[in-house]
Amino acid sequence: MHYLEIQGKQVRITNPDKVFWPETGTTKGQMIEYYIKASPLLLPCLEGRLVSLQRFPHGVQGKGFYQKNCPDNAPQWVRTYTLAGKSGKETHWVLIEDLPTLVWLANSGVIEFHPWLSSIGSINYPDYAVFDLDPMERYGIDEVRQVAQAIGRLLDRLELLGRVKTSGATGLQIFVPLVPVYTYIQVRDFVHACCRIIHKDFANWTTLERSIANRQGKIYLDYMQNAMGQTIISAFSLRPQPLPTLSFPLEWDDLQESIDPREYSLHTLDFSGMSPSWVEKTPGQRLENAAEQIKNMLY
Image (cartoon, rainbow, N blue to C red; front, side):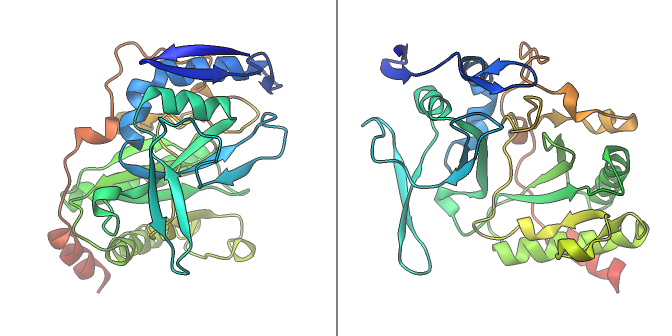
């Protein structure tokens, strides 16, 4: 056991040699080193948001679990945000606003970071809409890539700018930055309407069916991720896959050719020259004109 001094705080590091990804021999210590290097890119995606944490204390082959509440043994310098649920039960969320907090969480076995789509300053109003493309057994990343391109063309037609990233597993996700003035229901309904149009063009490949048993192995256009309390994997978060892959931002031109999500991993990326906070490149956008256009397309 030893301590890292980070920004004036002592962060305890335990078992850095424990193997977290057996297939590559990647250790917990290497994961912590990755999050330190990636922090200028990751932290802007997490700051000011509630974040669900997925912990794998014994690595990706061990049992993982989601954690929302800040543990009682957290260092005194860890900041939290308290939010009461519908039942009145309070959750004390960890606010990941600095490198010491990020490293402390990684040392506790947190591999995945899943932020909300709204910031705590406007908790009921998302500042992102998201299209989550989740392939199943019949189709793979190449079909997902083509569906994502179609969503990109639709957004262009609607005069909206979106950003695309790998999920870190087998899918792709598209974020549309918004002015935080729309309710979660309004944003969900807008994404649903867009997905209905995409489904018309890719009826053989895609489905809007929520029941996994009824999806027939097709690509699920998951508009329901745009609901309050739902989360999506952050850009630059690692994933508990056989390889230490991560959710990585792409440019639209990257989708012109086949992509392999396994290429974006802890062991392959060079962060030098990367711009921090890829999502901040696009300012918040309004939906009124786009929603009216979508209505005309559907009816």
